[in-house]
Image (cartoon, rainbow, N blue to C red; front, side, top):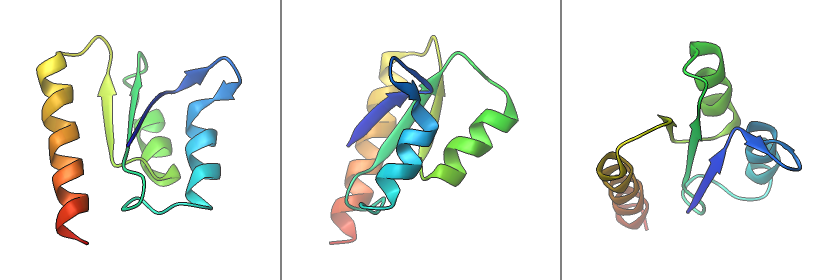
Length: 79
């Protein structure tokens, strides 16, 4: 599992996900994006790049934990 911000020291986290998806499927590497940006455009970019979920910061750690559990359980059920 990867949890990535939209803003990374090396550049755009969403572009990083798109490059990662050229090598790994969502089932192989589940991905959650988090960001200060709540805009629909950014959420859509993240999903189109291959993220399975999106969290707007600040977020409740319990919500993040639930999202992680769902993605990991979904990945295990597909194997």
